[in-house]
Length: 252
Image (cartoon, rainbow, N blue to C red):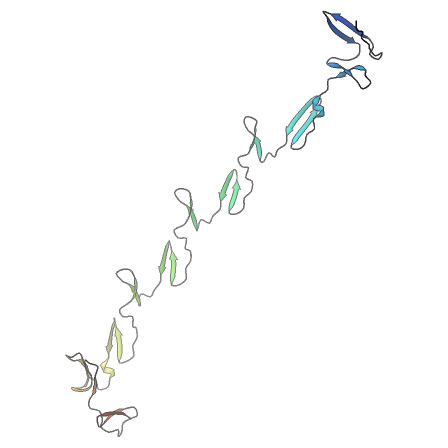
């Protein structure tokens, strides 16, 4: 029969054989302790090792020990993360914290900042230019309430039947005597021509100038020019006057 050897330091131990089970009792030791074998090959009573004591953690994992309670946790930024209803980690709804212009973030909403004078939202809430997005114009153009207009002098210009800009019929505004302009017509003022009593367009589409009943100047329909009643001598004529020298025109 094999024997059981016990170290003398392991005193007051009784070995009981009951129902073929071996029980070792000792006066030292406490409940829930175990028999261990140390480096000197001695049997002794020791506490059950607690594995939690040997756990090392690093951020963001945390460890807290209060008495016999060991708590393992996860450190997180509460402004960015939260626990769901199932205690699962999730991003907060407003996890976007900052934005650059023209974007902005406020209370879970990301917004686009825009000038309401230039832009608006259409019926589908899409950004669009306003109808009157043209804000300024240089003369002769002007902008007013979504309309771009051309400014013009109504004394000189008008719109034709197709709304195209055109000169008025009387666009010639001034003339020197003996000519005059009135409502699109150019006239010769006979009263300013000394001695001239009438200007006649004859049946041949020629033009005649008469002093009284005598024709002194005529342009025929072919463009030929005739002069009548010219002086036949330059005697007494002022410089620049025309006279008839044997059928040839001469100028004093």
